[in-house]
Each structure stands twice: as C-alpha cells, then as structure tokens.
Image (cartoon, rainbow, N blue to C red; front, side):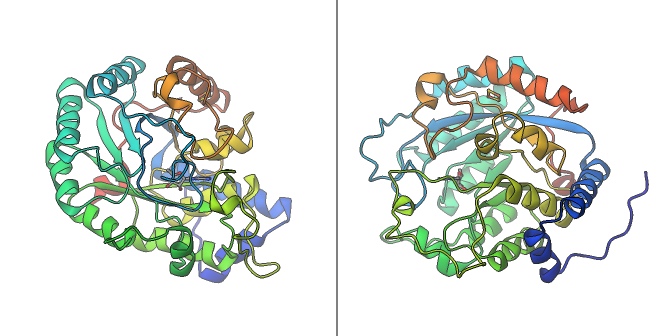
Length: 356
Ligand code: 5AD
Ligand code: FES
C-alpha cells in the first residue's frame, strides 16, 4: 500500500480541520489517519498495564480531582509488594509494558522508586513507563539509570498564559514542562506528552498550537483526552471559569478528541498514540474502538487493585473504575478483535524512538 503524499499541515490547515463540520470531509480525515497509522506503526494494538501507585498530590491543578485541597478524597500509596503483584498480573496477561502513574507525591522517594523499577526490570521483560509529574533532574536521571524506559508528562496546553491560570505555582518551583521533556529526551527516555481538549479558555488556535508542538518536540508518545469537569475543582466553578471568545472556545467533545487523535497521527506518524480512558468515559460503548480506527494504536488497561482505583478519581464517572484487572483485560481483547486488529507482542517501542 503506497502512502499518498500530502503536503505538511500548516497552522491554518490544522485550525480548519478542528473547525470542520462536514461528515464527508471528516470521513476523509479518519481515512487518512487510519492509513498513516497502518503504514507507520502497523496494525498491532499494544497494551500497557496502568498501575496508579499513589493518589497523593501536593499540587493545585485547577481541573484535577487529586489536587491537594480535595480533602474528602481518601488517599493511598501502594507498597512495593502490591505494585509487584500488579506487575505479575500484567506479565500473565502478556503486556509489553507497565505505566506507573501517581499524583505529584514527594513521598514517593527517589531511591524507593528506583528500587521498584529495578525489581520490575529484574522480574519481567516489560518496558517500564513512569508518569509521576514534574520531578527533579536527579530523580529522573536515577530512575533512568535504574532501567526506566519511558516517561509521560503532558504539557496540557501550549498557551503559557492558560497553563499558568490552571496550574498555580508551587512555592519555590517554576513549572517548565517543555524543559523537563527536553531533559527526559537527553536522558534517553522514550518521551510522551499530550494535552486536554476543551479546557475552559482554550481556543482553536491554542489547540492547533498544541498539535504543532507535538511535531516540534518529535514526541514518541502522545496522549490526549477531553477535559472532564470535576465538581470539587476550581474549573467547575462558573465564577472562575473564563472561556475563550465567542466562537473560539474548543468544545470538550468526543468528536473534537477524534480530530486531535487523527491530526496527531498525521503530524507525528510514528508516535505511539493511545485511545484514552477519558475518551472512553465520554463514549463507554465505542470510544476506545473509534479512537483506534482514527489514528490510535495503544490501549491502557487498568491493573490498579479495585480498592485503590476507585480513589484515583482525576475526573468523575471514569471508565473502568469498577472493573478488575481481569475484566479490563478481557474487555480490551474483545474490543481489539471487534475492529479486526491484533494484539501487539513485545514491548511496543515507538518506531520514532527506535529510529533515533
Ligand atoms: N479531565 C480530563 N483529563 C484530566 N486529567 C487530569 N484531570 C483531568 C480532567 N478533569 C489528565 C491530565 C493529566 C492526565 C494524567 O490526566 O491531562 O496529565
Ligand atoms: Fe476496563 Fe473495558 S477496559 S472495562
């Protein structure tokens, strides 16, 4: 199958796609994204086992249910043995990697985390992905040396003013996620980032800028999902919500999420792109599948023990929150088969990273 040649997308083309309403034209976008996905990363869908290792967080992100001042939320931090039990479950399911995710939790000590990474690497063939927020250079370097393969840190929005509005500064710290992504790259990590779609105040031009930044950063992994309002956060308060000018505000919709997935695929052909839980939350029936046929090639079944996962409530009504690891596993297998794709084998490194 020859890939038709399309001229590189400019900012104005991206904005036009984001504003596109014609179903026939959108069919063309889905078709192109699916073709580029097949050509660039193939038909395999890789499974990443997600382990939400701590829901403690010291930050005050305006959208996130784990923010420090959400006092009603019961907090947990998994032990190393509990994490290893989840890892073994992932091995039994044949997953190529695990993602260890947490709020920004300074009591996840650097040495402890490095030990956990070493244990996983010693006991399994899996790639280890960390998603632990904005951490110091020394910690990121230590974990890389311990064997961590990948790191996920979404920049959330490329609009600096909007970023600052929804990320109050932490005393003594400047948030510069773009700089951290550069550090991760230099340390030899496979680097992932992404954004939320439809943040109050996010314009079409902002979102097009996000997509251009994916390309400029040459990301190995790109995770995007709709903004979902959490009632216990400032962004749920209409008084505090500033929306973009009339006609400029990006909707936090299912359709907009597919557009961003498809455009991310066209801009970064060899990146690994998941069909995310936030998308599945908007359409529990077929959100995951539609993401996979419109550019995505990854799913992230949840391995977190049910007693903890109910408390990892970054937004309400999260898909999979009541399921067990076994159920999520079966569910994903059925969904992958239903669209005629196959499960990936091996670690599923991003061809972008491998080429580098
Ligand atoms: N709605 C949608 N996505 C959210 N995230 C955090 N809070 C929300 C929310 N309310 C996303 C952020 C973060 C990722 C782990 O989850 O993009 O980086
Ligand atoms: Fe968790 Fe479908 S993946 S229930």
